[in-house]
Amino acid sequence: MLNAFLKFLISALALYLVTRLYSGVSFEPGTTWLGVLIAALVMGVINALIRPILLLLTLPINVLTLGLFTLVINALMLMLVAALSPLNVSGFGGAFVGAIILTVLNWLIDLVMPEKLER
Image 1 (cartoon, rainbow, N blue to C red):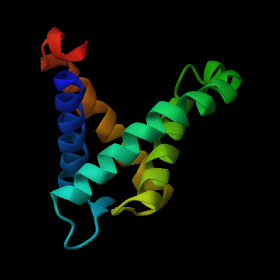
Image 2 (tube, helix red, strand yellow):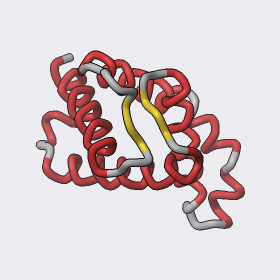
Image 3 (tube, one colour):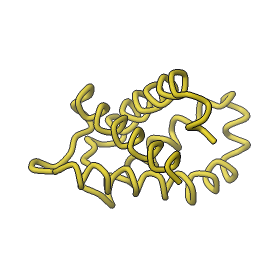
Image 4 (cartoon, rainbow, N blue to C red):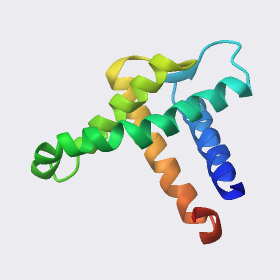
């Protein structure tokens, strides 16, 4: 339980870092840390429920593009999170770049995070 909570907090921090690193993704003015946590929670639910279905439905396109279409799916998921939370995204291009940055940040976090937290 503690590990899942720590992973959630780290994901919220990664989402916040994306808003600081790239101007195409931002939080609404006056958003508190509660808003950041809500956006991270929405992202977690969407990535757990909707993203796998979309990846399965787009599997032929993903195979043809050698997995690059996953970046499009990630951008769409970020746009959906923005529609349901205090996150703002400046169109599909902003979501695309933001999703790439978020993917890289999550990859870096996974590299430095101890194995015990991942279980």
